[in-house]
Length: 137
Image (tube, rainbow, N blue to C red):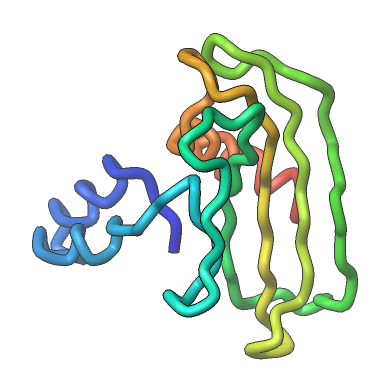
């Protein structure tokens, strides 16, 4: 489940989560110069150079899609819009997940220049939640 930090704090206030759970829910390893999932075979890229662009991705895996036989591969429902001090165009990808016939994987992503004022992942996630009902309706 993807949630914003303040939403997790609200879940603590109402007793759904305990404070110790937040670290487990929100922790992730991130290294933009490395790709791969296992130590063996990892590929180091860029060698410390600043990337020309970054692809920011947010998404969810959900259950409950009755009509779950259609996929979108790189769909955009909007033009370039102002996000923070930058501009971005959102792209979507959605498809049935292999875990269950009612499960669906959905991503929203955008490409940005890595500079001050570029959209943050938290901002992108907030946009994702706002736009999701329109996209998956």
